[in-house]
Amino acid sequence: MSVTGKSKALTVPDIAARKSGIPLTCLTAYTTPVAKLVDPHCDIVLVGDSVGMVLHGLPSTLTVTLEMMILHGKAVRRGLQRALMVVDMPFGSYEESPEQAFRNAACLMAETGCAAVKLEGGENMASTIRFLTARGIPVMAHLGLTPQAINVFGGYRVQGRSEGAARVRNDALMVADAGAFAIVLEKIPEALARQITEDVAIPTIGIGASAACDGQILVVDDMLGLFGDFRPKFVKRYAELGQTAEAAVKVYAQEVRERRFPGSDHVFNDTPALSKE
Ligand code: KIV
Image 1: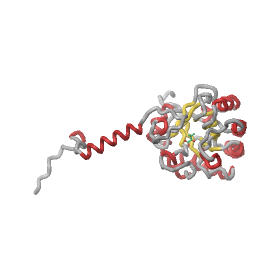
Image 2: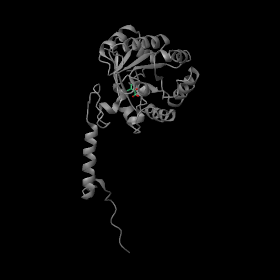
Image 3: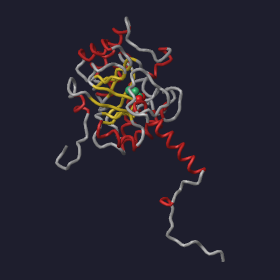
Image 4: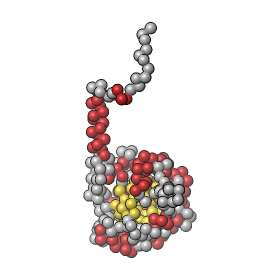
């Protein structure tokens, strides 16, 4: 807390300094009310491209656009005071060249006020990460199961098993060397996550990568039970808000049909009935 009683906004160096410290708490958010809800409890709030699947009903993250990320990024910005805000670079907005990545990352930062961007990829993205960080754009890397590469992987399978482990570890070393300030490790075995966390000097943030990481991230709708029946092994459901909401909607519909809502508490009875003349 500062002397004004307001929490100080976390910076990229604050996050980097948490390596091997108290684990970093991170969640996604896509709207102002959810950003306000998670901000006091999270170090990082990610406007993930998962927004496409979670809020827009898309079958994957592949058709998420820069415009969608800007719209949701602006909404999240209005809800944050303390957490570091990171915005995902959508598929197709950074892979072509470091220059393309810079143009679109700078646009995301200018439009949303985020402090950093996240992009998927390891060795193949190292030169891009170097290019961005050298020009004032902090980058969070994302390795392991990278959902934008779903067509290459052929499914949402665990990555980094057996011979794949060396590749993921090498990717982690390369992105750390290129200047990434943190790495999301998605859906990799615990032993590999522990090894990478020991090997790199920047925080690792796990999603399906065990408590060996320096922090954890989940899609907020998954952990609140708001994304239907999607129950991957690595998600713990901390609430069942979807069920609670459905039950509430059912009662509302019933009360409307039975004229039990609105009741006397919900109407304006301060004006006498109009006469019929
Ligand atoms: O898009 C997203 O929400 C993410 C997190 C799950 C890490 O990339």
